Image 1 (cartoon, rainbow over the protein chains, first blue to last red):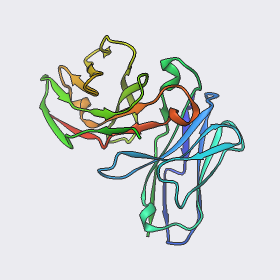
Image 2: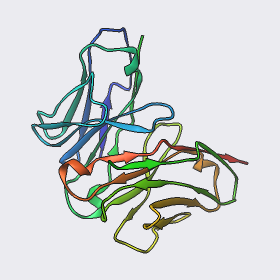
Image 3: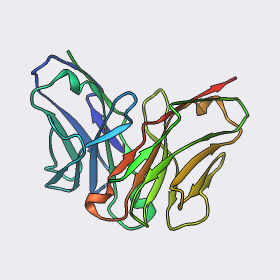
Amino acid sequence: NAGVTQTPKFRVLKTGQSMTLLCAQDMNHEYMYWYRQDPGMGLRLIHYSVGEGTTAKGEVPDGYNVSRLKKQNFLLGLESAAPSQTSVYFCASSFRGHDSGANVLTFGAGSRLTVL
Amino acid sequence: AQTVTQSQPEMSVQEAETVTLSCTYDTSESDYYLFWYKQPPSRQMILVIRQEAYKQQNATENRFSVNFQKAAKSFSLKISDSQLGDAAMYFCAYRGPYGGATNKLIFGTGTLLAVQP
């Protein structure tokens, strides 16, 4: 009963390095999301996916890429990290459906990324 | 575009007292969902309460209740009998009606609640 698991939980990168954050959910959710959280700015959507093999841009997609090759996994990639990408990243997932329960997101515990 | 505004960056309440956190939002939709999430120092996002816009009755969950004013686009959270464990960042969030692109959750900037013993 793991829910949403993010790896790694912490990472320090140098400017220009690349890395991938992995999000895995075991609830058979159709929708998955990547958010970043910065002080005073709440959570902002980076990219999201409404199903396996599909992805879409959120409000702050620049500098990130994503892939959803398997339904249970949603990967967030930084090809060339920049200090502006220092943040806490959250993955979330939810069912697809009409009732209110389908609109509840389950979040991972977050991944703190520092780019020097 | 939908927006969510939390105008109180920080709030403080005495233990056992009641506190109300404010949230306003902007949308042209008539059907949508509103949420309050709690983020304690552990960083985990925890759903506190949710409200469907088509329901006139305010949602309640134990010590947590909302005052949903659809015409005013206001969605405040009341915490009664505040406890030390309630200290956290609270986020108000909006989600549009069913549909792939509108199923995104839009967050306010948060209110940091301190509970004084």
